[in-house]
Amino acid sequence: MNGKKILGTLMVALVGGLLAIFTYTLFIQKPADPVIVEKSDSQLVRFANLPQDFEAAEFDFTFAAENTVHAVVHVMTVTERSSAYRNPLYEFFYGDRYNRNPQPMLGYGSGVIISEDGYIVTNNHVIEGSDEIEVTLNDKRVFEAEIVGRDPSTDIALIRIKEKDLPYLRFGDSDKLKLGQWVLAVGNPFNLTSTVTAGIISAKGRNLGLLPDEFRIESFIQTDAALNRGNSGGALVTLNGEFIGLTTAIISPTGGYAGNSFAVPVNIVKKIVEDLKEFGEVQRAILGVTINDVDAGLAEEKKLDRIEGVYINSVRENGAAKDAGIKEGDVVLRVNDVNVNSVAELQEQISKYRPNDKVDVLIKRDNKRKPFEVVLRNTEGSTEIVRPDDLIMGAKFDELSDGDREEYNISNGVKITDAGEGYLSELGLRSGTIVLRINGNSVQRVSEVKDILGGGRTLYSIEGIQPNGTFFSYEIRR
Image (cartoon, rainbow, N blue to C red; front, side, top):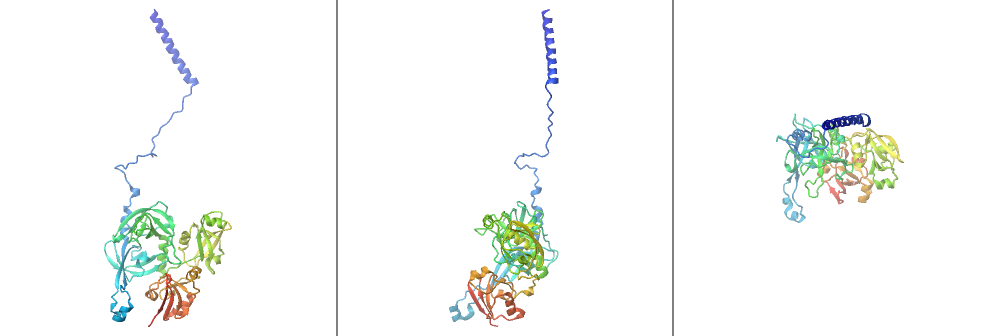
């Protein structure tokens, strides 16, 4: 009897407990919303090892390498130079017997085939002053090359071999390059032909002060792709195999690769090549201004509201900028919708155009923006096309700048901007030489040089100052 009472009591307690729990969950505690867990397709955190089945298609350099090496050539130059040292005493006793035959000097570099009919672009410093140029293709065929044209201001030269159906590289667009983008450099360092190195775009618009020409255009692409002696004139290409730069220089305390290499942007190369092929001479367009980068010091000194653009120090009389209404103290912000924030960037944009081309230039004046339309001019101040016939004995001249007059303490003269391949070059005159007198006549303007030497007139004497500052005087007996 007592057992039945205990069992009944437990049953009542159990039913009561279940009823209490049911009532609590139904009326007092509300159920939480369900949590749905989905499997993610893309994990944010990954293991850092390299699995065996890893496919590196996005980092694959083989396509660009295999499609580039056949269009990059080895360039060898031969220059005849006398190895004799002139000794007046020896010459007095023994005459000219001390003169030996000229000894050949060999130079090496690279080149890029840009058309199936044999046009090859390289650096001017690779072929400058050479008497012979020999080109070796990747398949080891050898050809003699002729110079189509040279441009010391950009360190670009165009040569050609007589051959058809050649592999060549297509021009890319260097304006679209981005920092950190992968590139390959292809060339012939230390005469090791068809060498490929990889790197990234480290910087753009580098001005190194490397070229001596007054109208030099330096806006180099900087990379960390390894370059060494012999790479000059080679190709910088994207992973798609597009030609986007002409490898040119390195910064190195030892002469070997030290982590930085530089290439001429292909948009500059393309314009120079087109000019040389069409006109035989580069059509240099200039604004007619002297310019400076805008930095914090200049911005404070000139009371500029922002550090941007390129500051105009002075404008050239009868120049393109002055005729358009641009003034000293203006700041150039943009050229045809391309922003410019350094001297190198402004020079690069203007270098794409020819004399008589119109460009839209956005100027900041008194911290207010104002657009100008500028008709570009050539280095002589006109809008005319320059022809090879305009050269004087194969050389190009320009009037002296105020800096030239001050540096050499002279009041007259003209400067050789490109000695070319003519008679003046044969005399040993080089770019940067200042000519003071020709045939006994003092010269002040290029037009005076043309009057004295133009039309096949004879050169009897020439005096001037060499680029190193030493005076020279030649008398030519004919």
